Amino acid sequence: MVVYSKDKALMCKVFPSSLRPVAMRWFDSLKADSINSYKELTQAFDSRFITHRRVARPLSSLLSLSMHEGETLKAYSDRYWEMFNDMEGNFDAMAFDTFKLDLPTDHGLRMSLFGNPVTNMRQLIDRIENYKRVEEDQQQGKGKDKVIP
Image 1 (cartoon, helix red, strand yellow):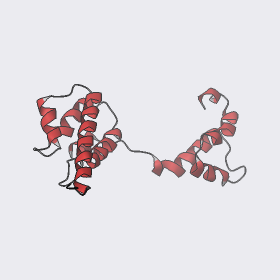
Image 2 (cartoon, one colour):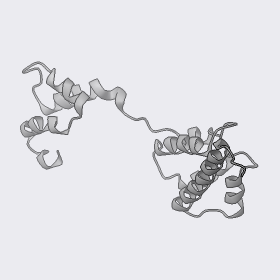
Image 3 (cartoon, one colour):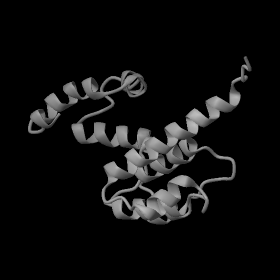
């Protein structure tokens, strides 16, 4: 769209090519000659789809998370990263601290993060993935019937 930004008439013609199916159905339902300019088109689009915009979460939402009793590390980390990714700004350093503090005090990952702190996001994610694999292996081992020869 940026390529055509100087030619507003062409922008109106190219606009539909950037739409996904739901927005395309909305666009196709517009009455002929109901839009007179690119500005009107973008305003109509914004007013129709404003509810689908993601709102950045404040830092306090990350601080309010904690791992629930009985929750798997995978479920907790999925919730945590979903919220972290909804935040605007660079809170990597905060992620190191809040993730480990929100784990139960006796959790192996928490003890590992306190004993051997991570220094970047990749290290944190790698450490979490390692502990998730261990947790999944333990859960699979519990579900199997032991065969005694």
